[in-house]
Image (spheres, rainbow, N blue to C red):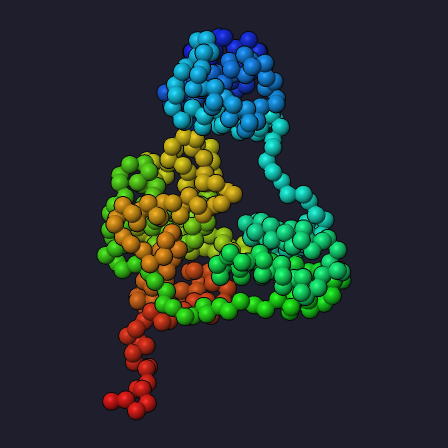
Length: 411
């Protein structure tokens, strides 16, 4: 059912029927996204002002871009547009930028997103990784960036690659990187070289020219949070809609040790309250069903029944303010990481490591203290190798004390 257009200052001053139509469509989009009437009116005031200005400037709707927005922002300080809102708030430009995104999605305005120039050998490598190695898209995006840089520097003919050229590229690329990012560059380049060798596009064993970086993965203790700090974090969650959402997400991190990306991508179909289980698809597309603890299930039910926005989305966790959308799929863990950081700040807890991963360490340490063996912890955390889980054996200091041998020559 069509709703009558909202009365907005300056709306009748727009002469272009095409612009009037896209404003009407955008108003419906705002309604569908969950904005209240005041929010819709504020957005439309900004969009209508922008529409009046581009007509006065004799600009074509199809040609507007980020530069047009910059000129409009400069215009607002000396605006004399007839009958429009003169609101000087900074968020006016954010409203217009959201309108521009809508126009791009609808194909009214040409998208100007910078896309890397496709290189055949790189695209074939990424497809090979996707099909034969089962690598997820986020990892492929990282690998693709590094490999495109390699091809840009060394050329698109792998037969010309040399050990010296490869080492020089990696050294230059990793000059300002930390250990984790440098290892990612090395992994991408070495995998690319293995693919080229398999396809007979370069000399075999060329990846051995790149020496792996030193990585002492067992050099430190895993650092979780003590039970009293966990209680403070959960107690600091309010009873508002946002607080109920945050509490449910945090309990998934704390009790089940899920990754931030796992929580962001959780769908309604992944929850089964009848069997008290939850389906999780993590790294390497490995899908498992985990038991749903009572307090986690209660928190999820309370959020879904009383706090989750009424939006047509299959994802469990949505933004708490309009537009009611899932957390960004481009960086799926970022929204949950923000929830974790905010919760720690509210509780006044100084975590040993920032972000949501500290709760994964906490979950593992809790299971170990409750007598769960390493194989059980590996199953819950979905580790491919038991060696990855072995680091948590160092947390049980009581057992370690029983097997420790006296220092030779000591008292």
